[in-house]
Image (cartoon, rainbow, N blue to C red):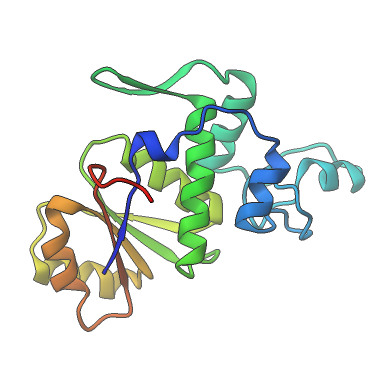
Length: 193
């Protein structure tokens, strides 16, 4: 079991960074293996390569593409809110890039399945958009599943990684035994090192 800390404080970096620098930290995101991932997904060409091909059009966008475009158009608008915590579109876009980097480090590639066993907290869309950014398929799971039920979901979907809220990690760990799925537990109370 891997414990990952995805707290809002540690994941959101309010200082602006060039997109190319962020993209280079998690690897090439363009289908042409350039360092700039304008679309934010590994199987799509970036805007530069789309222009070079002579066609200025979106190539098969998904929800992660819409988040990236919304972050460019409305960077300071609120994307999600929970109690007194509000996360802007630009912050959510940056956090999803970091989550994509974490998932890539865990071996998730385009076409792999990522199981998400999180309650209604801001971490759910962070992991959701991070998974989509890599071109992975999201397998949402109910947090109240038993270990036996988790095993069925993981085996049936072929998930490579399951991201689980720390309070429900026991069922995920039990369910992941005997599968090739790695468990990543999120505990926002842990201090990131």
